[in-house]
Each structure stands twice: as structure tokens, then as C-alpha cells.
Length: 554
Image (cartoon, rainbow, N blue to C red; front, side, top):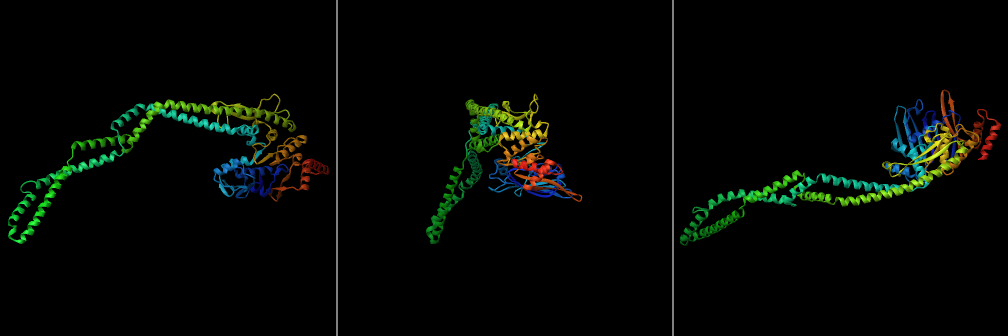
């Protein structure tokens, strides 16, 4: 509930701080005293448009701060704050501050954390519900009528929402499968061609690397074979190094015995012959090993080029070609087995659709039954509020299937007819602002605060009525406020007498400066204010006595 309001430099209000309590609080004052300014200031923290005209003349900026306290933060507010990443500790008050500059622009804060006006507007409806002469929020707005009826009738809205989500998911899955198969059918000929091409080539994982390595080895062998052939010409023949070494060794062997020094030379020459022989053998072995088949090189190069060309065609790596082949096979298999899959998905979607219809129709019946009870409850409240000629109707209309959703298959709207024989019209289209406020009061009483905001404000709900009707309005406002907080701006002494707290709004002049102030009245002040409301400018003893009787009567 609203516990504190601080206003600075708003129109005629220079500086003002007010504390509010639970129950019914009434605000009174002479016409033009500035009650609307108070509501405009509160509207700023609730996300209303920041008009520069609200800034007090001669000031650069104006500000409003409102404090709300809750035993537990309402779910709608908590969710909105979580989405905005604003943390409120349990038991911590919610403090909203708004600043407006005279040259345009505004800023907002929630517990000293900067926020946009959209967030203030989002949570504003859960904080304060304002009903007045030009009400376009709360109970007048048809967008909230279905939720109010559901809370009143107790229909299982969550079951419908769950069934809708399951049906929606089943339809999406079915549609996706249908789209996939349809696209696959369009591509079937191309898929078959691609698969045939890949199947013919039958690419293997890692094959590119193996082919490239083999190709490189064969190309190197081709180059080395030519070099070895040139080297063979050097080693072959009678004048080759090995042959000459052997001739020299034989000659030295014949004369080696003639001198000891020649024996060492012969041994060295024998070793040279042996080493040269080994070198020749290794060269022969290398030549045999490096012999390549030109056809094998051509085959390796051809396959490597074919694999790479196919990879470019499918925009992938060569090693990904086997996966492409499996993918094409899977797509063709999906076409062949698609009908069976579609049958299963269609059955699941049909089952989900039936579950949703059953849940939505059950909710529809609960809404229809709740509408009858609500109409009767509102009708019982109309006569005491001097609306006995009026009629109220909760219209529950089944929507076409394309408009069904998580909220069910119904549109709900509160309708009224103010005169006998007149057609029913939307609640917000009623001509008289005073009648509208009384209709809303009747509806609020019937709904017993189900779905209401933390704080409810009625602005001049008693306009144009008095006596027994005003007393009935006061009694109903007090009843509504018993378990919450309700503020009423009123000109009726009968309503004012019902207030648990009473604030008086008054203007004062200091030279050429006019100011608006608000004061919380004590028991004596309340008697005097109600007497003023009864008698006018001159407060008589009879008016004070009547004020006492009104206060004692509550």
C-alpha cells in the first residue's frame, strides 16, 4: 500500500509530505483547492506523461516520491522488477521517484536505481488503481475484464494456458516436419544425383591426406630416378670408379709382398673396394625402390582432383564428403519414411488440440456461470447507488478459432445500459462520469477486490448525489477498504465521515504567490471540516451537530 508521498514544486505545491494508512482515507477541500494536482503528482510516479506545465512557475524542476510497503511484493510487480534486473529485498519498501524538468524531459528511479517510464507504467497498474471522471485504466479497460471474471469465477486458467502451450508446440513440430519433407520432395531429383555421384566416388575419411602423401612420394621418386640413372652411368663400365679401384688393388696385391709399407696401402685399398661395392649395392636397391608406375601416379592425381572438385561443389572439406553422403541418404530416407512420421505428429497435434478444447470449453462454462453470478451481484448494488434503472451485463463471447490463445477461446467485456430499453454498451462509453464511478464501485464491491491493485483511489465518485446515495457510497467504500487501502477524493460529508483518516486540501496566498497544502485532521478538525461541507462558507452550530451525528453514525 501507499505509505508516503513527497511532492516538490508541482504546480501550486511548493513542498509537501503526506503519510497514509490502511483502510479508507478521504481527501476533502473546496473546489479548486488543488485535489487534482495531488492526483497528477501521484500519476507521475505511476508512469503518466510528464508535462512541463506541472513544474511550479519559476522552478527548474519538480519531483515526486512515493513509498509503497507490502507484506509480500505482488507477483506482477516482482516479475516486472526481475525482468528489469532490479532487486528488492523481502520487507524492503518500494520507493519510486520521478523528476520533471521545466525545459522538458524526465527521469525515474526505483529504490535509487534508474528506470524508464515504461517500467513505471507497467507496475503502476498493480500499485494504484485510479477511478475518476475520465478513467481509462483499471476496471474500465476491457483488456482486464477476462482476468477479473476468471478470478471471480475460479476457472482453471492455468490448465488452459498449459494445454495451449502443448498444442502450439505440437503444431509447430508438425509444421516443421511437413516443411522439411515438402522441401525434400522438391529436392529429391537433385538429392538422388548428388548421392549417385558420391556413391560412385565412395569417398573415405582421411583419404585426401593419404592420396596427397602418396602423390608427393611418387613425384619425388620420379625426379630422383633420373638422377640415379645419371649416377648409374658413372658406376657402370670398365672405367667406373669401382672397376678402377679393383684393377689398382690387383696390381698392388702383386707387388705388395716386396715392401712392408705396401701392405698397409693394400689394406686401405681393399677397404675402399669393399665400401665402393656396398655403395653400388645401395644405389641399386634405392633405384629399385624408387621405381614408380606412371599410371599409379595418374590414378592418384585423378582421384585427388575428383574428390577436391566434389568438395568444392558441396562447399565442404574433402573429409566431410562421407558425412554429406550420409546426410543425402538420410534426407531421402526421410522422404520415404516421412508419411509414418507425419501420421504420428498429426495424431499428437490432434490429441493436444482436443485437450486444449476440453480445457477451454470447461473454462468457458465457468466463465458463463461466473458471469451470471457477477451480473446478479452488481445488480444488487445498483439501486442503493441511485442506478436502479441501469443494467449490467458480463458479455462472454466465444471467439473464432484463429483468435484462440493461452487465455482460452473467449472475449469478455463488461457492458451497461443506463436507461430502460437502451442497448448495452461498453462500460467505458457511459456518458456521465459520476455514473461511471458508481458503476465501478458497484463492480468493485461485487468482485470483492479480486484482482485489484494495492491502493484504490476514487476521484469524486459522489459527484451529483447526496443523502442516502452518498451514505450508501460511503458505506461501500469503507467496506472495500476494510482489508486494504482506499483513498477517496470527495465533496460528500456522508463519505467523508466514513474515513479512517481525513486529509483536507486548501489553498493559501502570500502576496502574489498561491500555494496548495494538505493537512491530516484530528477529531476536532474532522468535525469542523465536515460541518463546512454541510453548511458552506459559514459554519453553524447546527452544521457541527449534524457533523457529530454523521461521525457517530459510522
